[in-house]
Image (tube, rainbow, N blue to C red; front, side):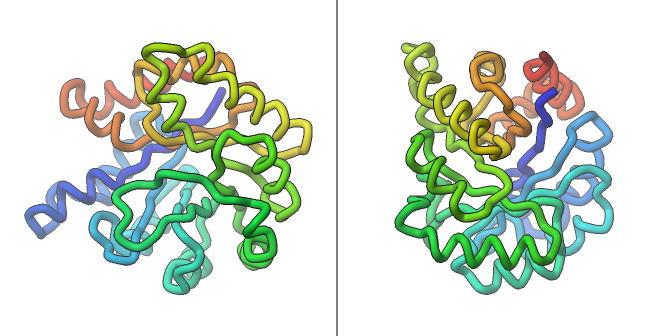
Length: 239
């Protein structure tokens, strides 16, 4: 079964809107695990507008499932944080400062040397590595040369086209996943996956190990409750 890692950035956004500690991010992360999620994802950004660097430090000792930290390793502060916290996985994302949300994957060919050196640094610390990439076979092949353990397929394009042309929308992701498997890379996916499009994606992308879902899941929880929502997403991922 594909693992569900819940991105809790939006919970931090709500807390930060009023200051204080409501909702309690640590308690929410523990509850999400208790409700069945197999991982927690955070994406601290340099301006700390949602997840703060202190949040990451507080979460590490209390989590019982996989901890995935996403971010741009070109920020030294991010690299230092990951090496200090030692999560189960670090996902390298080519964000720029002030970016609203992630909107593209790495050019793994152009950035090969940089990614290779950075991945080696994290792997020496015993941290599994993943690279955020578009569903492009050349970028998958480039990822293999960097020494990464996994790729994370950036799924916004699939989500955008799903309601009108789901067969053609998922096709590049199916091809990318098959190539990744041939190359011995693990496959993660994330961005705009939802209750509406998740099951179809899972059915057509072979070897999918993990999905990271935040915005849609947290939004659904406003209607359905967090425990029920986590269970609903898990059902979409059943084989």
